[in-house]
Image (cartoon, rainbow, N blue to C red; front, side, top):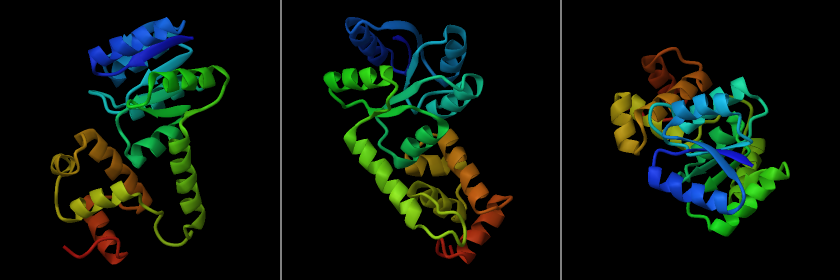
Length: 212
């Protein structure tokens, strides 16, 4: 396969590139961030984009959306250290064909890439179990009231209600400021609020957080 690598750590990219070459794949390009990944995916049209989730300038999640908007048939697999369920489900919903953790064995990565070549998803059994569990919870969730928030969204909501700004929320939760903004955008949409003030009031009224 012709593969584009996107990761902000050059040493990691080089190591993966060496493995891919040894397995007979062609690394057609390397991107240092999501913005470069989008541009190179458009220019090179690789068979697969192997990309990290958390990168500078443009996140991997936003890069998926941009690449898919321009190339609906593009194949994208995330290779990341993030075990955050919000990242996992956001990537899958955005159109990623797989979500792999960087601690997997090289032989397992090779099998996952072979699965992609066969048109299958690059998902380990452990990740598949998490996805099925989430789908089961969604099926059990009631359809009344506000759309269910994820655990990470509830964490962000509590801090918004406490009056923290995006930069402070990001620092407390160990995420980038862009990721905090991404979560806030979805919380506003789910709770149908137009501002942080309205969001905080709605959250307290609905019992989603305690009155600060």
